[in-house]
Amino acid sequence: MSVEQIRKRRKNQYDILRGLHFDGRLRRSELSRRFGIRKSSVTNIVVELIKNGVIAEDEPGDTRSRVYLESKNFHVVAAAVKPREILFGRVFMDGRMEHTGVQTFKATASSRQILDLLADRFQRDITDRPEHILGLGVAVRGLVDPHEGRGLFAANLPNWKDVPVREVLQEKLDYPVLIDNDVRCQLRANAWFERLLKSYSNLFYLSISEGVAGAYIAHGKMVVGARFCAGEIGHVKVGNEGRRCQCGGIDCLEMYCSVPALIAEIRKARPNIGPLETAADVARAVNHDPAIEKILDSAIVKFAQVLSGAWSALDPELLVIGSHDRGFSRLICPLILRHLKEHGCRTLSAAQILIADSEDDTLLKGIAA
Image (cartoon, rainbow, N blue to C red):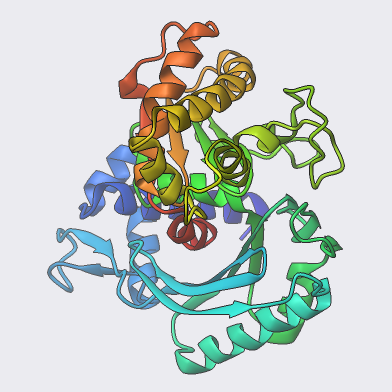
């Protein structure tokens, strides 16, 4: 089989699997018609996929039967590297997820120590259920080269610079390994498992948590950028107060609009406010104090100044907002809509904004996707 024939067969196989993922059970004739693949090629690919256990038939042995993805067994062992902790889980082909643990580490941990933690936990999860593992995935913050599998830089992982994640883990574990940026993973989780790509081709994802960042899918494909920093709006300068960012810059957007920045401003205004550590705490505080609502509104003004330019340049169909708390995301949605319109995005409507699930879940699901 020539290289061109192999490439075409892989594309046909991908189209068939994608069609079954987004549309459910389909007959071979429907797959042929929908994707423009010869019936004989569909038959050959389906036979191979059934043999490998990836798809199954409603009526085994009947070529007119509908076929579907066998999603109960095949899975990815996934990890999400966050400041001071790593989340682990299994993600199955239908998006079902099993959390398998959390591993903490010190703020001073070296990249090699973090890789050792990843390898040790992956090995345990592999040993526990070695069957039907499609591969290993690592979502990590900061700049990531997904093509070479390297973590280039992360502001909140001080010893994380040009880390050969894929090379080290594949050598230790002998499984295929993928690594990508956390926000791109969050967008991919929604695009794939929430099936947004079935209805939309151009999506912008906004994450407001410990930092502020974005990710973008254009014409159905993830945009990474020439230097792997497409969507990194959190480090655009927006103020003049001399707030120093972990990236080394001054007055970056996330120094005004991230959850830690909002908490710091609220504590200045209300020193005796009590427990205030998470996005959910911020949402509850805003609901009971107009002064705190004003602090949040002022932060979203700065955010809209940056996002309006990106929105106008990219012209996406949908804005997906993610944070650690859906209540917080719901709270900021109308503020974002109002201030984006004030900054020139006049055609934006509430129907174009969607609230994503918890970021911890989308991190693991996104790298699996």
